[in-house]
Length: 260
Ligand code: PLP
Image (cartoon, rainbow, N blue to C red; front, top):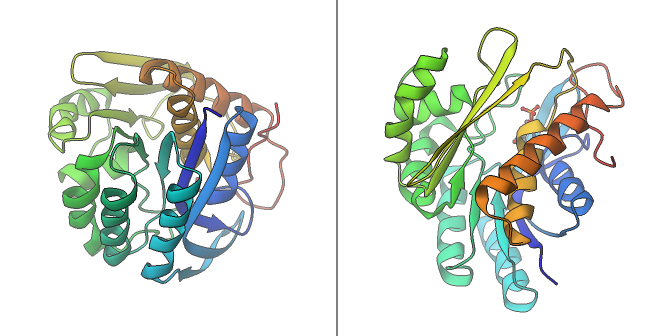
């Protein structure tokens, strides 16, 4: 079966982001989702109330047993929480999945402001995992942390692309959802092409898990054999529809609607 995606990420008990969003996205796009959970969060639409990292050896074991038996056509990486989890995942990829395409969502802070990656882990992320990624999907604040600049405008985005490319992922999808104004702009840069994706902004507070969902949808596309650009186009359309149809659950930033 083509379309097997191993998701290495954190659990969101509220069902909107993390592993839960990842499984829904991959399933709804016709793929098969497998998981290696890096951390549990006690979370709802109002925020992250607690984080419980999974022991490193057990993260490695989840990756090992999945890869040795089922195998994966693509891997999605989300929340990594700590420097030692980053090192564990990097080593496990080298040992058990050296040739599998990797979509790396550079998760750092939840929308409610709770850190999902310890700040001192950023250098490890850059050194040990970014070079292994087929594509990384930073939003503007994350890209700013990666390259040590504040990014707020379209010009900032364009100027940041070479520095992001130099971090040595094969491609970068820089997400401009944090730009001010009505227009949304994402830029996808690969070794030999630059694509700009624009949309009108949807006025809603129900955007919890959009980053997780987008990255998993891209990973699913790659697993199903789509070229990267087509995987990104399909994933963006999927996320947009999932926001438009969001059910409005919870009192904060609510989840998306995947089954559309
Ligand atoms: N919880 C987990 C486990 C996540 O992986 C993420 C994002 O990657 C979030 C929460 C944050 O989601 P959002 O910023 O969309 O609220």
